[in-house]
Length: 309
Image 1 (cartoon, one colour):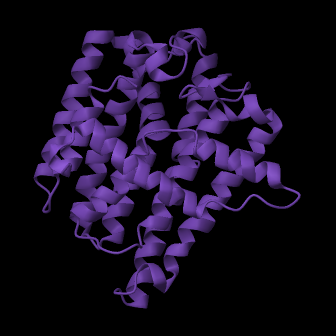
Image 2: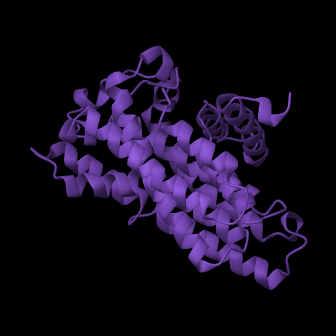
Image 3: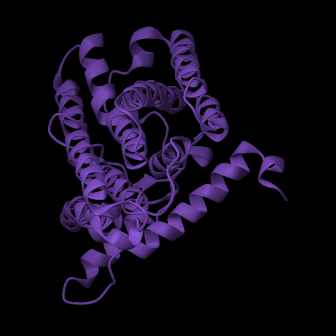
């Protein structure tokens, strides 16, 4: 069956499986006195998921004319960082979730102490992995000086978007918001921008940077990724109310259980759905205006507003 004959769900699943196999190649072996840590890392990373961030990275890389394997270490690194954030998010001290994607969470299998170490290890190993892009074997056709410049710029984006002014900052604001009597829309936007959108921005920016895109293109794709990230998070909020546990693979209503204010709790379901559509339409327009074949990226963005899990 040709790729064009497959549904978007089948194409996403096909690409996700290929990306998962790629990520497996970058995971450390499971030997030594710290074997349980290495096992927990593998368990966490391979526990399922859409592989959305590395998928967006690779597709943006191709959209901007990138060829070769220089993007692959960053794809694996991005998924490790995303996974570590979920491992820590599920902890009893955070969301206290025992299931994710229909499987026991890392702390529920290995204990909360090992889950903390697992998250720490995935974050550190992500940067070890990404720095493999400096090696000539992943980008033989690019001069060393240019390769080093692009990889260094990509590492800078990865560190910033995952760091204290990025995803971790957003997660901190999220934890603090749970203690507050009321959360303003400005606070909520900060949380969504950093906890969710920053890694999606990093994915698309890194894809463009490694492909040698100009600054204007990188900035436009950053805006596109921001819209996708915010829309993705609002859709998550909607699914926490309207979704089905057997489809989501985790309990619904966890936001209410944890007294979390969301875009839905502030604006209601209808306005939330309208905002998802608006953000997605703007993202699609940016993709259409970018030189290159954006067909799959457009289909993927459209799919995200209809997803049920």
